[in-house]
Length: 131
Image (cartoon, rainbow, N blue to C red; front, side):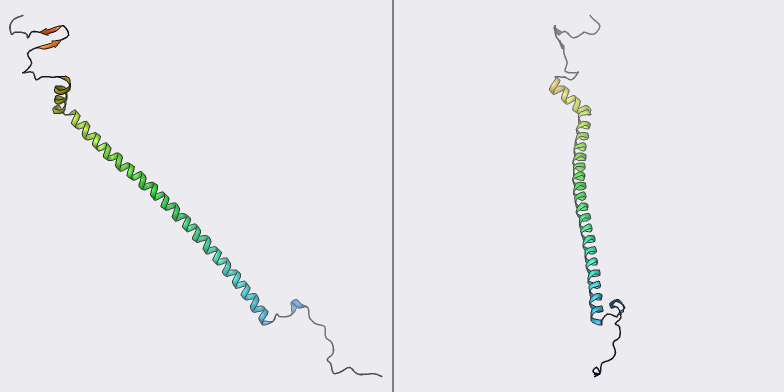
């Protein structure tokens, strides 16, 4: 008894999985995954660039503070230098030298001088034409 098989098509060998086209949903999932990986890499790159820019900004701010501090010190030293130049100019003036000599050293004007003190005593003024 030869019983015929139910109406089935003859068996055909299936192609290998790799040669079969992927279903549309699977291809879309792979494409979505690739896009998400690219977006993730782009986000990481942007974050790295932003952190570098912030680091440079902080460095720039610190350098500007140092520069301001040095500039303030230069301004202070210039003001002090100007004061010292004025003091030196005043100290070298003839009027100031005369004032210091009269007050601190006891200098008297030539018209007022009658005698010159010496360690041995007072020396009499020299009379004109005599000894």
